[in-house]
Image (cartoon, rainbow, N blue to C red; front, side, top):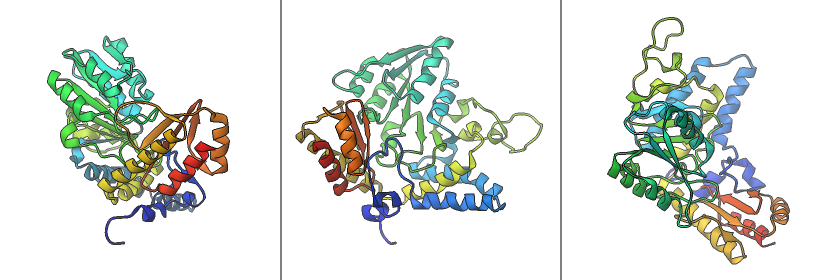
Length: 366
């Protein structure tokens, strides 16, 4: 193939989409052929007694290189993790002691909430900020002051799809000398934060959402890697990579916090990062935001009300009056989406199209 990949070419890599409208990537996407093929090849070799341990082992560090290139950050700034909670807990255990206040939204995803709440036992003040009617960005900005050590925020929260204005939060933390922790799990792969402007002190991403990876492959990106204290020091976090005996000499860069990789997760992640890196990033973002806006407008015209305020994203949540009936209609239209109590949540990736929006709106309208 020559030139940037088009949405229909990308869509053809997902066999599940031949019979379903997949709007549930905020939970997890269907498997992409390059990813499932890599996993199938590895599993077949394992079954045949031809397990390629060295090849599987090399997948994680290879993915570090690919992920760093995808973001445009130094490879030395990338640590290999198993989850966002592990990334947040690593940072929480390594914060400089000068200040003791952490600012975080009270409705944050728990992987980016509980590691900070646990710091209360160590004398930290954890300020849980309620979301005001004008949105999370404004709420967080109002809570930042000269005592703030760190602000922890998700770029996009799947509870309602609000997109935080990271540039404004960065400006506020800069003004008081605080650090910024960003969870980009629900945005990276579709949205591209301006890292040159935002300059997050810590960026955590679990790849099993919009990055199309298997669950268990995550990254922590930070220029403060020399401060990090590994939660699980092992042979993977050492400089010499030896197996037995000796003294603990941490590896250079963020690799000092690497954990022993779950082989198959990283075999799949290597293929997924290559795939996502081949997409035209600006086109992907525009495509997905346009689909989300089209659905949002159609849902409101059908009588559903949008949930959340602030800047919208590729994830849309609307309040509905007949959740049980809507669930039945979604199933009959073969639409994969989340209905939770009186809310419908949908999310749009580059493989989605206008037909998907139309089918979902027909199901919503009943």
